[in-house]
Amino acid sequence: MELEQLIKLINVVSDSKLTEFKYETEEICIKMGKKEDVKVVTAEMPTQTAALPVVQPAASVTAEALPEETQASQQEGSLVTSPLVGTFYAAPAEDAEPFVKVGDKVKKGQVLAIVEAMKLMNEIESEYDGTVAEILVENAQGVEYGQPLFRIQ
Image (cartoon, rainbow, N blue to C red; front, side, top):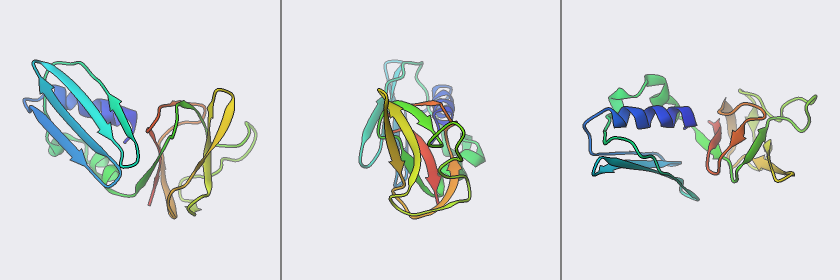
């Protein structure tokens, strides 16, 4: 799930009357609840956990409130997430071709991108065999720990 989609989801939950919301797939589990007009949002990955505290008015949401394209993209494929905070690079050099493009077939262990952190270049490898269905971040964009980078089908 992209950060923008997560923010939209939080806002929809905030504007509703639900007191608790949970969305879960094989790759991600998002739970939102509210206490005393304060909402805390936590996103959990099976192999790693990322917490995103958000203080907003109490709220709730139903799956029908999400855009259809968001629901569809969350249900199909497996996500490759960033193992660290840094800068995402789609290619090994500025003038080089990207490691992968949407539609490319990939194998488990194949390099998909680089995340630079503290002047160290960290190769991001595919955790799955399949086809690159979506690249969820832009070249040279800052990324967070656990942030989805690619969707592999």
